[in-house]
Image (cartoon, rainbow, N blue to C red):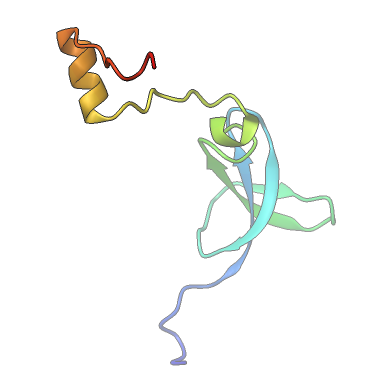
Length: 87
């Protein structure tokens, strides 16, 4: 690997702005804000809009859209019914 061409990889704390959830991870991102972590060290703080703590997929509050196919949507739109569906 060439020296001096890669960004500095270091530990940073990511904080979910909506829930306050914090986790530490390695990153090349920098920040002027710092926070003291549980281990007593000070790390840069990166604020994120959404994380696994607030994302609907991970919290179980995900809304599923109806997954009808094209033919079903066409039939609903124009009032057609499937004669074989009742059998």
